[in-house]
Length: 401
Image (cartoon, rainbow, N blue to C red):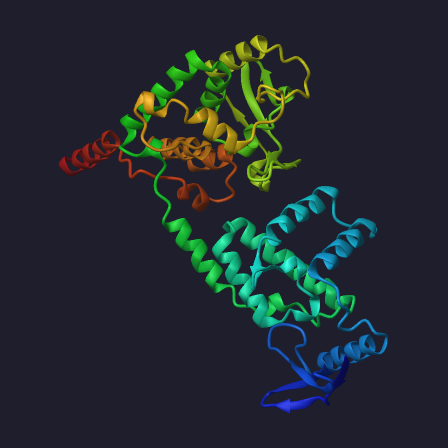
């Protein structure tokens, strides 16, 4: 296989050169592919000087035999990961572990019934990358969709820098508006959680029935449900709680939230989801007392011991808890549909909005950086008619005066 580069040529208000690939086909040496490299407005190469540098880099890689090397994307990923582990002041081990989880999802994407992990680097281009993006939209969750596309871009960038048969980051050329539309559609189509459907009073009745049955059948789960009902915290923030995170000072109990678990992968992060997520939340007297009883009953004495675990003493997994525990008695207590830990978060924030609590306090307690984020959690269309009547009465009284 041979490569020939054309001269840099004007193309309207842009410039380009071409890479022509030649090889034997049926005993005849002929051109089999032409790839055009042109300047772009918003990404490399932006001008003729950058284009010339790119041409010089490709010529060098052709000369030393590294251009068009028959590596697969999977081989490149392994080399990239080793590179990250070796460089000074590189990513934290936890970050590299996250890349491994993302790669597992990325390898599920297939083009022409073949995992992209096994696709040769030289076969990637803008068209293939666009097809990969569309397959991600179909098969991955929004979170993995976003993270896997970022990972693919990092791999393309590394391949270009190392002259491994990819010229530049094709992800920069792909329109991701379709992903944004699908993400927005998924968000807009979400129904209100079962707990908040039917209004304020019905919501409280559902939760009361849920707590009553768990108090009798599964005490440990009952305490966890009570905590979720009061805190309205993220499930990933609650399940890694340790004994030392429960603090009592001057008779006032609080929970220190300072880490989180990815509820999909189960990986622990030693910091919350966001800067606002690092917080201390004060508990009610009743919850503080219940927590003390729970800790004594379960003989939790080590400050670094998990507060909530499986029967084997391991950290809870969201799906197992939801499917095997949380929704176990729904039919018995008349709840139609499934409850998730997120339902409690929505319930608490919706309830506080209904009671017209202070917005800044809500944002602090629930780890939200902005009022707009808190507002997204308000569901069910609850209206506090008592409060509305009080305001109407005040206005009427003023009108009389």
